[in-house]
Image 1 (cartoon, helix red, strand yellow):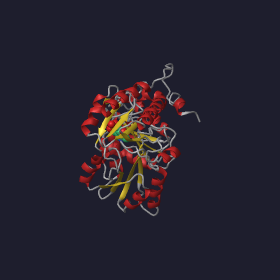
Image 2 (image 1 turned 90 degrees about the vertical axis):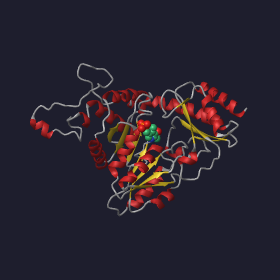
Image 3 (image 1 turned 180 degrees about the horizontal axis):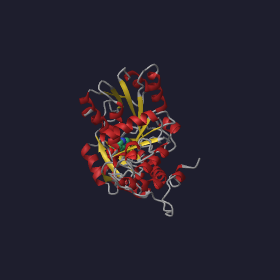
Image 4 (image 1 turned 90 degrees about the horizontal axis):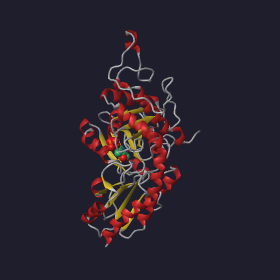
Length: 394
Ligand SMILES: *Cc1c(COP(=O)(O)O)cnc(C)c1O
């Protein structure tokens, strides 16, 4: 099979005859005209054999869905207007009143907020488990458990979980159950490049296309990919009933980002490892979190299951520094801008108050800063970190 970087460019899209341009066309529609009443009554969109209404898909969104499913090694894809709406779509597709959801303690924060702020009010409970401890997941599974989120690596602190071991725990619990527990991975970090989520055993892979597939820091979108047709239909019907839509121009922006995605991923990976390794040696830094560093939790699992790492690392600072000093360090950075998100062209950073976002006790007393590395020259970024660290430790 050809390498992903080749597949991203040589894809099955066929332009209209006589117009051999590479980019897929941008099709816009609410209304789609049917040729006859018979067609109006029988045309089917759920299997992509036809078009019926803008909300149910256009050639542009079908093309993007096909591309994302292919990149991730899945078969089916549903697009959502943001990564977070893809998270809530999965929750709403698979959970009903009385069900319980299990979420890793180090999961993406707004997904936890959806469970606490919305699902709880609908009679759907949630519990947190320790992603680094499959036995803890086994203990938390109850007869009410219906959905288990996974995230590799964890949000902010980047602990790398043993996905096959966590999936095995769920499979063992599923033996003899009428309604199987579904596993869903937040695959934004891996993006289909660092590992194949389905080969590791997960049922559903959700991604914030906002990050790598777009790559431009200019569009919000999410995806839900599966290999299983029944699971896909459940997500697709929930998506239809919710009326979720992505705009054709946004879909075009993501399609435009895809051919360069593998190159960007690897370039940012190389720079991030350089900076994380360097940062770990600096005075005043007590620990750096990045799955490729042997001192980072889950390093051996990352080495076994993944072939690359994304553009994120976090640094825990020595406890002698106050939050005010760490905030000043962030303010002093010139190339790393203050802001959310990652995988765009510009480097970003943000301080986090760890104890407030974890239920599991957080072992470091010092403050933590998460860095998202962009496409700038690695040495310029390192010099920027160096000058801000110098001012902090002086
Ligand atoms: C950014 C992100 C999301 C949400 O994506 P948005 O498009 O910003 O809503 C979900 N999960 C992870 C891991 C993310 O980094």
